[in-house]
Length: 90
Image (cartoon, rainbow, N blue to C red; front, side, top):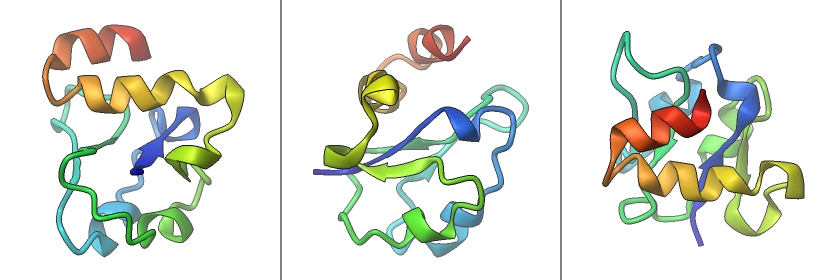
């Protein structure tokens, strides 16, 4: 299991989650991305990011609401094909 960042992060990108992540697994490219991405290979499932998010955009993978489920794929995709992930975010 990993954590997933969802719709409320789009254009917000508060980065409080980045500040509390002990393994620096939350990434984005400044000025390019509209949302932050959690690397599922680096995430240690500590959960520190979830309560740190002021817009409640972070969920444990098993708790992602059905309407946000596609963000599980988008988060992982960004680490292999950034442009494809960005296209899915819009």
